[in-house]
Each structure stands twice: as C-alpha cells, then as structure tokens.
Image 1: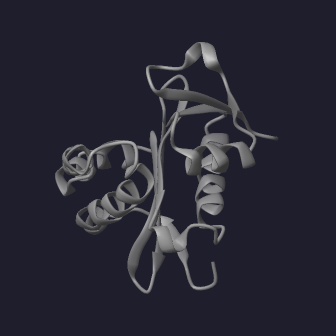
Image 2: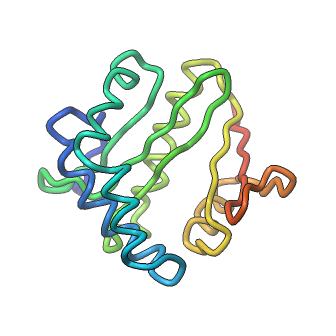
Length: 162
C-alpha cells in the first residue's frame, strides 16, 4: 500500500468514482452480469450526481465514504451507513490494486467510523457468485447468515472486536 493515501471522499471526487466502479464491476461481475447490465447499473448508482447526492449524509456523519488515492487518482473506495443498524454498501478497488491491503485498510476505517457511533455489528450483501468478495469478507470474519439472504445476494454479518 506504499504510496496509497486513504481519505474522506470530497465533492470534487464524485466524477471519478464512476470510473473506478465501472472497472471494478467489469472485473468482478463479468461472468455474472451482462456488460449492458453492468454499464446501466454503474451509470445509475455511481454517476457524479448520484455520488454528490450522498454528501448531505457524509457531511452529517451518518455515512462513511472514504477513498484510496494513488498519485492523486482514486483507485478504490468504501462506503457504509448507519441508521439504527449499519450496512457496508460498497467496497471496490481497481483490479490492479487488489491484494495490496488497501481494501482491508478501507474496511478498517469504516469499522472505526461505526465504532465511534457505538456500533459493533454490521452487515453487507455480496452476490452469491462473487468469489472475490466472499473470500475478502470471510478473511475479515464475516459470517454468512443464510436465512437473511435476498435472491442471489448473500447476507454477511460482522461483529467488530472491541
């Protein structure tokens, strides 16, 4: 992780999140979803306007959204929210940055955010065929709670150590 810096997302980052999301989705989901579906999904949920719409929650500290920056370029990000419970929404890296500890560091920062809010348990959903995601979450102590699965999405729960 040598020169990669982790910091809070700022408004000027919003247009750059889309490119990271698209490359990460194409790498992770290429055998699961069609290219058309991936493009439409990323265009909808990771557009600059979509990301900018989150800043009210980010600035009011209801939402965590940090980015990994290498040479002033976003190479990954992690996003979680709490509202009575806590959910990890997104954690994506450019494929060439996977395996460098960046995702683990981003996850750790997200857990610190949740701990500051008194939250010790949280969850995420991962596609049942997303082997990269399932391995990552298993490595970090998430457990699969099958009765809470939703369609093709696994419900993974984590209890943070105090």
